[in-house]
Amino acid sequence: MSFLFLFDIDMTLIDTGGSGRRALEGAFSDLFGIENAFDGYHFQGKVDRAIFAEVYGRNTGLVLEDDVARELGRGYLVRLEEELAAGPYRILPGVLDLLRLLEAREDCFLGLATGNLEAAAHMKLAWGGLDGYFLAGGYGSDSAFRATLTRLGIERLSAAARSLGGTPPVGDARRRRVLVVGDTPADIAAAAANGVTSVAIATGGVAREDLADCGPDLLFDDMREFMAEANRNPRIVPDSA
Ligand SMILES: [Mg+2]
Image (cartoon, rainbow, N blue to C red; front, top):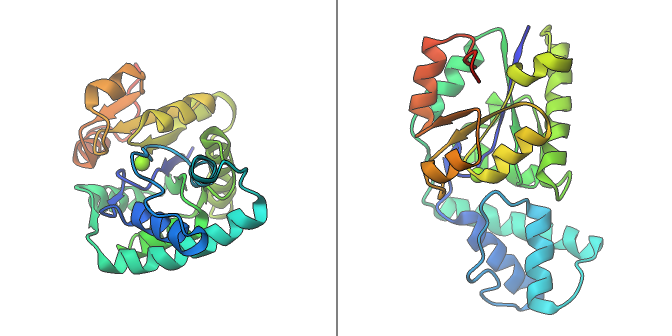
């Protein structure tokens, strides 16, 4: 039976050096003439659609209508390309090795569960040459709720795995064979809401102790530590988890 891995992007796989924040600030300035719209705003684990609506509401007192949200998304993508080019950008330690290790295993299929808009997710990953590792995903353009986009990601990755000859887990087997990997309490909660394994990686802004308080199934300092565990234990999820 196959394993499905769904990865968060920002501060789990890559650190775009604040490109996303600067691109959104630029788009708010371009479209609405609002400067510094994101001062004091915390992005951690939030979903793009929800971020847009929250910050728009905070700055204008208005509800973000769908057509304005789409326009904002387009403006954001234009700015994001510029900001990624301006850098800095880094792939987090151990990420490439882990992706290569899992990709080489016939029983592992890789996907995404990210709050990024789909186009932004692929733009960010492509900048580091990581785009080709992921077969399917759930995105911030699918839903403002992380649990929902994670469910969609699992469904799509299951279908992709099946089409490639894999046997994606169903029913109770999903509990230990589907892993959601992320750096925030929101990633852990989304895994729990879907009844699958959460893997917390303490490479974002949330301290390891604070992630531990959220009760993840697995918790690592970084991807190098996760990689060592995956090498040591091919079944990946210990019996006790
Ligand atoms: Mg993240």
